[in-house]
Amino acid sequence: MPQIRFTANLQRHLEVPELIVTGDTVAEAFQQVFLGNPRLRSYLLDDQGSVRQHVAVFVDAKLIADRTHLSDAVKPDSEIYVVQALSGG
Image (cartoon, one colour):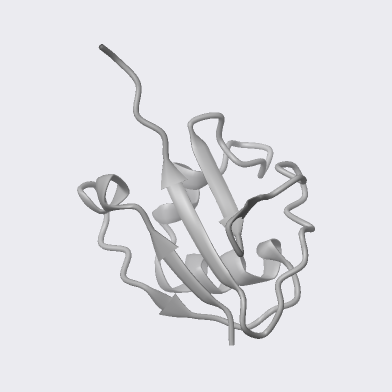
């Protein structure tokens, strides 16, 4: 089953342990995560359900192409990694 991990800087705000999920798309995988942690949705997605500008999502080390509908495919052995970008200087 796909595995989803979150960057450490996001975990400073919310407890988001590594999870095993099911689903054929990033959207389906995220739905399972949000069921267990509803607050995480607002950290990752905007009001329209698109990935926020400061968040990057990788599936098997490749940046997802569909930030709006999250339709990128997820295989049974995929690794999904969610990174919250940092800015400043």
